[in-house]
Length: 80
Image 1 (cartoon, rainbow, N blue to C red):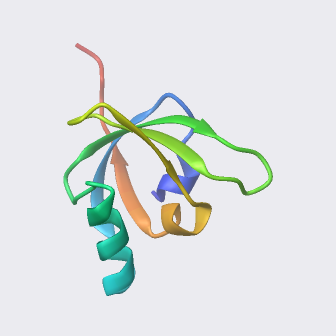
Image 2: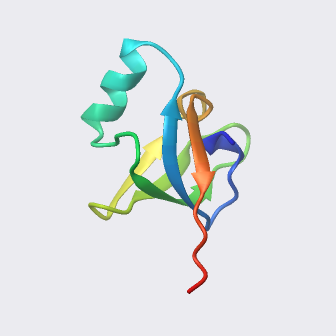
Image 3: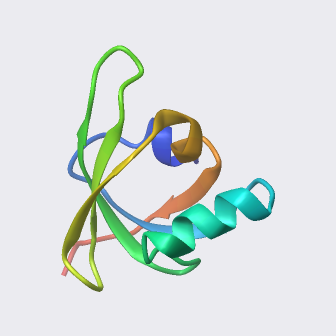
């Protein structure tokens, strides 16, 4: 599933990044790496950015829709 398809409130793990070196570089500058847990906080309408929380640091980061389409994630089960 792509990050751009995840509804708000869901916890996901970044499993794969599709794209070239530029995509990896941009994500690493934001402190986001494969295996990190992310929570989708808000998805702006009209193809706007996606606001996520980077769980390891607690940082809130806006990700462009194009980049979010390149981030393959898996849903994390939050049931205790």
